[in-house]
Length: 319
Image (spheres, rainbow, N blue to C red):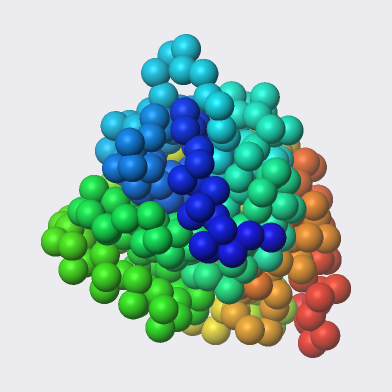
């Protein structure tokens, strides 16, 4: 496993680079990719991001200026915020066996690159990218803005319990470059579409409590998305909703990706290890935030998730 200094030196040797982001891209993977692209371009490198078909409207402004043109041939492949090749978008799967450098912050990181660096204790992959880029050159506003998106979105605007003093130190350093962080905060944390509000209302009206009301299950079937004509942008980070409910320390959000295929997002407090729960179902992540995919009817998928929670928690109560 590489150190930050070794990673910076390796990147100095790269050129004609293609950067990969994960399925259903969030602010962390997009912000990291855009910042790394800007930082390497400042060194005179030719670098692009592989287009991601699931890009949301909120993340697109940070991604699109760096999107690879059709026909670009890469010499080096770098992945950011990707724990496993199973999270590669369809158009990235051809690169699964030829990633030259993988940069990540998940405990479940599978070290699939020819060279790898991981910081599992980091609140966001953006913290690690910041340290790497700080060794490559000055922190410009062009680099700092997407990095702020990365760090702020993976910490819920610094409200999640993964936030550390170093997270705030990185954010402060980025803010000192003069970026418009207020616009980022407004767009990502203080603005919701009407469709998003309708989704949240429907989810909350049908939520189910378990484990003496310490665990909650919220569902987003395809029929719900269709009812409100909602898109990926409207559904982004719905997994944060359950954790806001008083008394809940294990929030399970089940989103149907296609018929009978459920994306499971688990958000927990210290009592429940989300990574262990999702690992039992073929996924992974962090202790307080993890995910997996379950292919089964809704009731069976829910049963499997709750069974995994019960197996990892000594005091789980069936009622």
